[in-house]
Every structure is written in structure tokens, then in C-alpha cells.
Length: 456
Ligand SMILES: Nc1nc2c(c(=O)[nH]1)N[C@H]1C(S)=C(S)[C@@H](COP(=O)(O)O)O[C@H]1N2
Ligand SMILES: [Mo]
Image 1 (cartoon, rainbow, N blue to C red):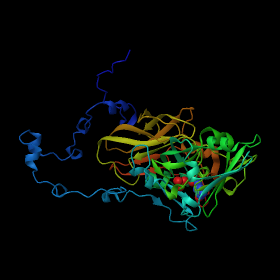
Image 2 (cartoon, protein in one colour; image 1 turned 135 degrees about the horizontal axis):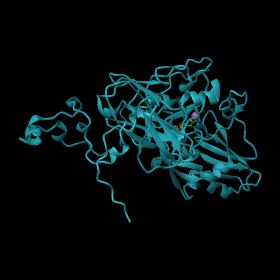
Image 3 (cartoon, rainbow, N blue to C red; image 1 turned 120 degrees about the vertical axis):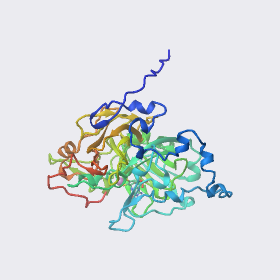
Image 4 (spheres, protein in one colour; image 1 turned 135 degrees about the vertical axis):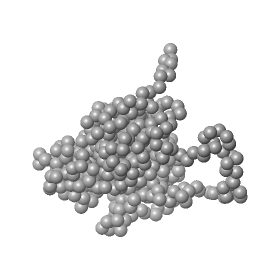
């Protein structure tokens, strides 16, 4: 039998410190700002006559705007965003030593929902974007196989395809947060080396059954067709599980900067494994020990041991609204929102705190919750015009809980450069100004941090 939903309105009483409200408020219809604040300043402009019922809006404003007085633009072969949205852009790195080696961050704070538009997917290239003519690009699968094969795009297009929504995150994402002092910039420029798309292509297991994998093969070594000739090793088990040769990104063919005409997609694992412009996959009994799995991506721990092949991305959540270096508009209802993801599977819950982690309340999650993909969370908050410290904390389906920064630093030490996933804190001042901080007002007093001078 179906349970009937209670018609009882959700209480406006805070459920946690500093004005966090019940997440079920968002399930109520007709939620208005006036329920939360008496301040008319926060409400949209009201035309007095409409408010008192003496006139209809059409009588008050009969003048049609210019765009209603002439026919609109013709159809366009490929749509582009409104010119009024031209400030929504990727944030490119400025300090690349070599031209073409660097990254551009996805502007997470300017985006909504859980899918990254193709033009705003973050980029990380080690030697620029190759301009590949697909007619002259082939994929070779060789090494410990029964028969070595070349696949042209036409060949590949005959195989059954599969689509899957998942994030890709650079292992170096958020690494400015290892620095002693918190970077004050908006979330995208700190945590924006992550994006989430619906990818379509051919499962690697399909291609491997075509070539026949020999029993002693344990790894695959993938190589890209860029001037860097990126090569990386991936355990065969993962490749057989859920990795694919991606050809499409959010319905259309991959963008050149994201690997056109084909890339590896290794769901939930380090971005660097998702080899773009892939031209060669070699089956091997051991990893190749390439630059990006030895001199990079190896980290010295406090114990004196190093970690290497840290392939899975840990769970992380970031608040995308409010945004560091901007203002919470006015006291009253505000929707705190952000994204959470885990390389291990599904997001189970996201908790939000407005009092620097003293008390927490569970956020509402926008469904469907997809494993290894962005999950949007939302939390109603009544900001009372007082200082507050906002945090979000994700727990994934394996029970893994996102750590506080000091916990992460204690565990991983002072040589951390990759895999930063600690809880992010935003300080809200009494005038509403928002700043990214570590905890409370204190920056990291400990010295010895390497800072971001390495490459990733
Ligand atoms: N061939 C090739 N593949 C590559 C890279 C590269 O420089 N060359 N960069 C890697 C890194 S470090 C990351 S984080 C992801 C970035 O993918 P994106 O640019 O599509 O966001 O691609 C990976 N694949
Ligand atoms: Mo990366």
C-alpha cells in the first residue's frame, strides 16, 4: 500500500546551529521568501496596484520590449550561449612553464545541476591539444593478446555502444588547499579540475574480447596521440569492470580538448588515467612506470613510506553557493548548495554545518543519485545577518566520510600534493561577505608545506 504523505507543513524552526532549516522544506510547494523574512528589500519589485488588486500587470506595463516588436533571429546550425552569459568561462592557468602545459578550471560556482556543459569541462593538457583528423587516427591494441588489431573510427562505430554518467577529476584538483593560507578565490578556481558528463562509447571489455587477452596480462598501458605522448598503466581488472573507450560526451562527439576522436574513461579513478586522443593500448604483465605514476603521483607519507598508484578518487563535496569573494544577498532564506561525488560509488548523504562543524544537518539531494557522478545537494538556511562558518561533508555508500583538513594533513603529512579532499569552510561576515578559510579564522600555522610548485 502507498503511504500518504503528511500534509503537515515542515517546521521553520532551525534543525542545527546558526539557522539551518529542515531539508524537507524544499519538498513543500509554494515556498516563498516572505515566509522567512519581513525585509521587503529581498523581495522582487512589487507594483502597488497589482498588489492591491486594482489593476492587471498588462494594464500597468503595456509597452512591449523591443524583442517583441520584430521577428527573432533565424535558426542556427549550432547553438551558443546568450551573449549576456559571456562571463561564464573556464578559468585557465596563467603560470604554465611551457605553452600547452597547464589546466583550465571549470567554473563550478557558475553552474547548476549535475552535468558540466561540454564547453566548460575542465582541461588538463601536458603539451597542448592535438588537431586530429579522425580519418588518420587508429587505435592499436597489442601486447599480451591473441591477435593484435588496429581499429579505425569506422570499425569502432560498428560495435555496440554504452553510455554512462560519471565525473572525471584530476588527481591534482584542489591542491592549492595544501598551501599554508587558504586561497580566497571562488570555488571553481580552487576545486574546478573536476567535471561530470554523460559519456558514450565502447566498453573496453568488448574490445579486449575481440583481441583475446592472454592469461598473464595484468595491466594495460595506454598512450595518447598528443605531443606529450602521455602513457599510463591501468590494472586490467578495472578496465574489464567499467572502463570504456569514449567517443561521445553529453550526446555529441568529444571536444578536441577532451580527447577527440577517442579517449579512455576510467570511472571514479584519477583524471590522468583517462588518456585522451588514445592511439595505443598495450596489454602487459606489469605497469610501464611512466612519469605520471612515478616522479608524479607518488607521495611521501609521515611514516617515511610513499604511496603510489593511488588510483581511486576519494569522496569530496564543495559548496558552490554562496561563493567566496561575493556576498550573501540579504538576511532571510538562502539556499546553500553544492556538489558531492565519490570515486567509490554513490553519495549516501551530505551534511551541512553553519557553525563551523559544531552541529550538522542533512541536506536534500537532487536525484537520481548515480554512482561516480556529481550529486547536487541543497540546504535551506535562514541567515540572520550574523557571522557564520559554512561547511559540507559527504558520506559515500561505502561509509567513507570526507575528512576535516587537519585530519587529512595529519594522515598525509606535509608533502601532500595530490588527492586533496578535505571539508571546505566558508566564513560569512556580518555584512554577508563570504571568504574561503580553513577552520574558523585561522589559517594553517604549521610550516613546511611544499606549496604548489610541482606539476601534475
Ligand atoms: N594524451 C593525454 N591524455 C591526458 C592528458 C594529457 O595531457 N595527454 N592529461 C590527463 C590529465 S592529468 C587529466 S586530469 C585528464 C583531463 O581530462 P580533460 O582535459 O578532458 O578534463 O586527462 C588526462 N589525459
Ligand atoms: Mo590530472
